[in-house]
Amino acid sequence: MRGAAVRDGTEGAAVGRLIVALTLVVAANLHPRLTPAAAGEGAPVPRRFLQLPSIWSDSAVVQRDRPLRIWGRGRPSADVTVSFATAADEAAGVTATTRADDRGAWRVELPGREASFDRFVLTVRSGDEVIRLNDILVGDVWLSGGQSNMALQTQFIVGAERLLAEARHPEIRVFHQETADAVMAANASRAPVFDVPGGRWLAADAPEGIRRCSGIAYTFARAVYESLQRTGHQVPVAVINSAVGGSSINQWIGLETTKHIPELGGMLPETWRVGADLTGVRRSCFQPTALYNHKIAPLAPFGLRGVIWLQGESDAGGGEPGAASYRIALRALIEDWRRSFEQPELPFLLLLLHPHAHRVAADQPERLASLAFFREAQLDVAGEVPRVVALPTHDLPLTWRAPGGPFAYQSPIHPLDKRPSGERLARAARGLVYDEPLDYLGPVHVRTTRTGQTLRLTFSHCAGGLAVRDHAAELGGFTLCGSDRVFAPAEARIIGKNEVEVRADSVPAPEAVAYGFTAMNQNANLVNAAGQPAAPFRSDRVPSTHLPVFPPADLRLEPN
Image 1 (cartoon, rainbow, N blue to C red):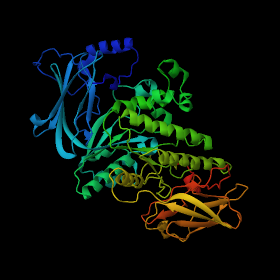
Image 2 (image 1 turned 45 degrees about the horizontal axis):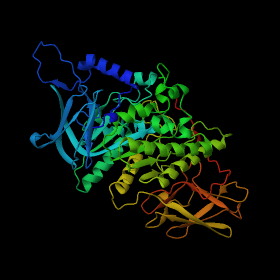
Image 3 (image 1 turned 30 degrees about the horizontal axis):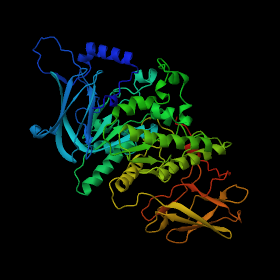
Image 4 (image 1 turned 60 degrees about the vertical axis):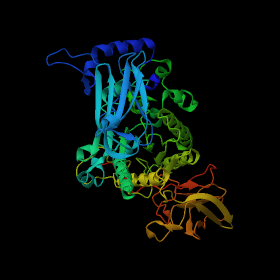
């Protein structure tokens, strides 16, 4: 039993004792699932100590083939017994007993189970208190994180009406939590808290179960579930919905990790460093570490199959130096979450930021390069950290005006056709995590060779050969530069199964090539035979002037 695994949002022994004392007085009203062993009608309501975080509640999905780590609070130093069994045969379940520490924190670990559509029951007992959770499934659990494009709800995406009408999948489930409740927005804790705000599990067997779920996360879960069904596997699939619009990456990284990385620790507010809470500070949930404390730490160490992540719009405007800082932060986040969930090889599936040039004026071409540097940083992390993949999105639809009524996120920075993104993530999961023999990466540039006025590029991940997306007449998105380091448009053609030749009359002695290296890069159309797009790249990192590509005027308009 490791009491330290339980987070309660306080620091210091004195504060801890105060919280426990207060809990003794008010605990009877804190947990609606508590069942007193004996209380006659009209009898005084007994004090209640036993609590579970809401990730452990009715209709949960727990990760298959991993130990079940269950934690909570109870009477200090009291024994706690936890059992897990099928509803059909509770006597045949597994049981573990532990003792709460002097603050009431406890944790047990039960053996993992294979995936099943059977319903399970989790029972927790301590003294005369009992918590009984019903309708639990064993399957695969994915955590979705990031900011507004990941948070954007299913009810607002393109095709929402059909998705809601087709919500008849009781084995797909969503763990919802409030984006940022009023307490968290003004009084964010500088330490991990015990539970997420408003956490609850819902099944995707009715529109209410998925309406407010992330559109990307739901379409991802559905695509994964359907692929498992097609291959004869009865595996429930769940997503934990955690993204917060407008958030920066440093808000999602724990304090201990942040303090030990100079590039991140320097961002901590002085009040954070010296130990004072930000009580009453407006939007304090957007301070460094705050979202980790409120929306990630309370979930750990719940078992996960992997993480899907889409974030960066708030961090992407800092040019090449900003991208270098993000590279450090993204690596730190992955290591931090793997440590928190006690899964050192936890897969991370990342989406590169989609083409956009939100409010970029014609006299700001340097801002169009910022997004290219940022995507490069995302790809660097995927190339350096095991079991991380970063997926291009520049070929996906940029629809951003929803048919029908107004929508709060309706702007060029929020494309509303999220199903292709969810399905692309699902394809990567099928290849990386579920070991299906399929191509989930597009062509990857590995080598450049100069021959006279041309550069010959060699690619990997092009089984079946290279192709042009949608059978377009020309291969687009390539630029070349000479010794002046000013990139210019170039012509490109496929010359073999895995090679492309690039040339430009205006660059007779090319030194470097770039592909899709601008904010608006949807004209980059190199794919492999499986239709997966090549990621943007540059062949060297010498300081240069990259060709700006401005968006069409209608993509820079704000909605009326």
